[in-house]
Amino acid sequence: MYTEYRAAVENTPEGWAKILKPDPLSALKLRVDPRWPIIRKHLKSPILDAGCGRGDWVAFLANRGYKATGLDYSAEMTKFNRKKYPNCEFISGRIQATPIPDSAFNSIVSWGV
Image 1: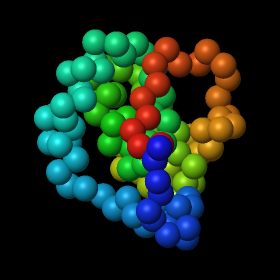
Image 2 (image 1 turned 90 degrees about the vertical axis):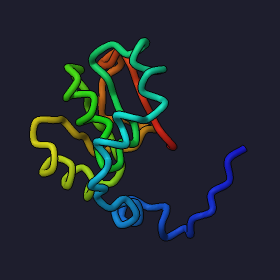
Image 3 (image 1 turned 90 degrees about the horizontal axis):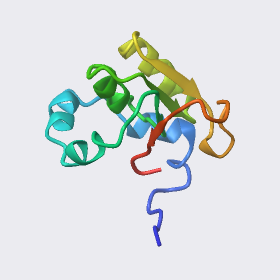
């Protein structure tokens, strides 16, 4: 069972926007991420990154030819991501009640949500 150790104030959309600062090494980290060789065999576009945070996985996937969309419950993060990655799609919303129609995606990734 997972136990949340962050303060309750950090576990809000605004709190996550403060925690998830830009990482200048994110592109390099994703290229060597051990999860990538495992999941790429199973991914089919379009892909939803549920709880996309900084949007790095969405951009990583898009740069490899996948149609990827990021969903995050922090409107501040999705606004930041749209500016950082203008060629990618980001949606604000909660995973429990997504503003996305059923069957809109063939694959979903969700790291840490």
